[in-house]
Image 1 (tube, rainbow over the protein chains, first blue to last red):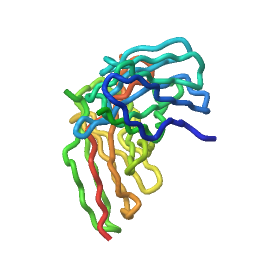
Image 2 (image 1 turned 30 degrees about the vertical axis):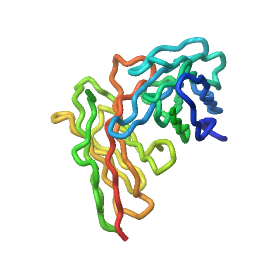
Image 3 (image 1 turned 60 degrees about the horizontal axis):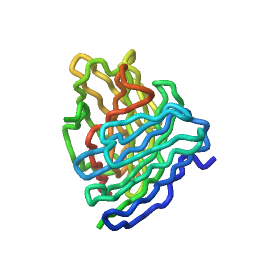
Image 4 (image 1 turned 60 degrees about the vertical axis):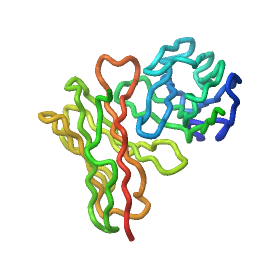
Length: 113
Length: 114
């Protein structure tokens, strides 16, 4: 049971480049989400999904797109990377129950130059 | 601004002592709280949770206390070990949040001295 798997672990992009951060979970969780973690800012929600075909914006969605074509996968797309998107990105999943704790992946460290 | 915060950004304790990490939350409607531990280079790891209809919950070497009167949450770690060194986050779930959206505090770094 792998839990939440994120790839890649590290990525360096130039300003304007695009890329997709991958996230997969094998726990049959309905709820999936993406957070970014910056020093002094804690974890901030980017986008989330309550099930396949359903996505919604979190606190800081600008510059990011998501899709949820399957229960297992929830990729995060950066359409045109900016230095302000330099951060550590975490994917998390849980059952849809409100009292179900989030399970996190080990993160993708992204640097935009 | 954040609705969940922490009093102490860094806590240094001696190995074997008990640790107490505090968290203040501002939304009185929050009904579910979680503590996470994050080690360097890893994602947050679930430690313990508590619902608002409880004021105390115990796990293995950890206890979470919830005081709804003053909107305060604490994590107590008994007999702190070097492996407990990490950043600890509290998080809250507000009833009108969609899905399982959590709001996180800024984190407290726990340093255990041998």
